[in-house]
Image (cartoon, rainbow, N blue to C red; front, side, top):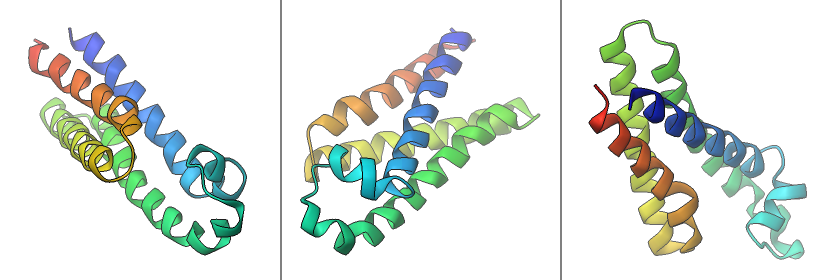
Length: 120
């Protein structure tokens, strides 16, 4: 089960790397399409999305630390912390922005958390 947990965590990590990219460096080209932003509003709200992308970058950092830290206990603590943060942010996003966030963000994070819970 630990391998499944690592794979699911890696998936959450990759999803959030993509989110960071589309909220920051790719916002004006790809992000505005993904988030259905009207073209006349893109320049106005790009800084807000960039800030949001920065926060998603911190989630990525926590998950990366879970993969690279040599102490297994510390690594798992970062992983669980990152996944819980992703799940909570996904729930909030589902309630305030779009129901799609539940499936893109929350469900993968919760699946990874469940897999870690059952990992030996």
